[in-house]
Amino acid sequence: MSIAAKDIDIIAHLARLSLTDTERSDALGSIASILQLVNQMQAVDTSAVAPLAHPFEASQRLREDVVTESDQRETLLTLAPSAEQGLFLVPKVIE
Amino acid sequence: MNLNPGTASPNITNPNITNHSLSAIARALKNGDYSSVELTRAYLDRIAAHGGALNAYITVTAERALAQAEAADARRAKGESQPLLGVPLAHKDLFCTAGVRTSCGSRMLDKFIAPYDATVVAKLDAAGMVTLGKTNMDEFAMGSSNENSWYGAVRNPWNHALVPGGSSGGSAAAVAARLCPIATGTDTGGSVRQPASFCGLTGLKATYGRISRWGMIAYASSLDQAGVLAQNAADCALLLQGMAGFDPKDSTSAQVAVPDYAAALHQPLQGLRIGLPKEHFAEGLSLEVEQQIRAALAVFERLGATLVEVSLPNSHLSICAYYVIAPAEASANLSRYDGVRYGYRCERPKDLEDLYKRSRSEGFGNEVKRRIMVGTYALSAGYYEAYYGKAQKVRRLIKDDFTRAFQEVDVIMGPTTPGTAFALGSKTKDPVTMYLEDIYTIAVNLAGLPGMSIPAGQVHGLPIGLQIVGRDFDEARLLNVAHQFQQASDWHTRTPPGVSG
Image (tube, rainbow over all chains, first blue to last red):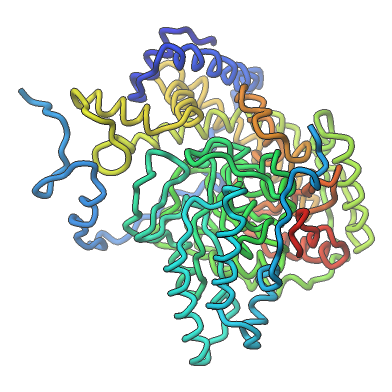
């Protein structure tokens, strides 16, 4: 499994990153060498091995279905790059 | 380059008050030798005088620290005397601190004022500790040299031409240079243990689930865990006591009782079985480091422990599995930075997609973008099974290696890193070279186990670390083993040139 320049463009778009030409060629080189490193594991037979997602295989603990959060709308909106009337502002998305 | 630490380090003069260990500070505060306010002022003066050269702090919280110190002195005057009361510390800038910038070493969060406290911060605040500031780190904890910070590289107090290690490099440099007596860190693949090794400190990464991750900015959620950078194991025990425990706010927090860590320190080591993974004493390890590690192991033998060779046959696969799992989890975790709700936003976005793309591209540094892209690729349609699925299976093989080894031994020991601290800039060109730095530490995170690094010798005047790995939730044993070694050796008392211990 190797990676091509067009794959970098697809990945960058999926990750919502825009790359300059230099960054694109740097990314191709470094990601190819990282994939070469991790591909060493492809040689290991894991057909009888179950995946391990959590180190102790704990399952997600559930809490009581009750309200625990207080209203922090005003505080949280002060962190936004742009907000107005209790809403986050973004460039126009509907014509 | 010149590896003699005497030549590149400035002469740091050291007022006596800032060279105390946490344990010594606790005694001095209790005896009334000095107040928390006096001690805090001394540290703030020292940071003002020497902090800039090391770049160990991103933010110094002087006013807040003095207010906390006054409050701690007032509590003591009313008769309180718990060991952490009035003791200063620094937090890695990855722990959210309400009202204080929490940058995670990233331009993305350069103006982010955390609206709440991490559980670790809240617990230590409640215990009466004094936060001196927030320490520098590799951006989003991605790095092994602290060269990936938006705020610039941190320098190693032992030699300013060298890296302090990463990603908790600012915390390590700050403790080593006595710009704080102790600090918090986090460890996803070695980020507490490797800088502890490079800076001559005692570092502990807790078992996954032992310390709450609530308010720790996420990198790789199945691997991230908090830890401590300290001058010795006894100090580590005291701070861990304040940090550990179940937290209902963290859904992966473990409901496991927390023992009295300080009480466990004094257990004799007679009969202790120490496993030495043959794979950690093989090709790639510097001969000089190996000699020092073997000498440290001989100390444990004299203390009554038995050395047993064990095998971790899949350990060579740990870097492969890690560099799929961690980037995959990072790509998901870091998708929250969209330039809309908080964090960096680009200038004059032309539409929503441009806003997302340019905010993320301008807000994240190169290593972060690289890991996001690797993770995105590993999780993408057609590659998920071959990469993420495969890495999770390999993760089980690595975990099973430890489970088998721990049937025969009580702890596992070996070098923390293959060599001593390396030169700034020497490994930044090729990410893979940097990744291989964490060869001995990464498997421990994949298995979720607790690990420590303790000073165990020097090579050409630079500290090297001995890694101690334990069974899950067996931090008390690790601290006991480390403390007993420190009663029989003095490597942990060595300080960088110009810093008195």
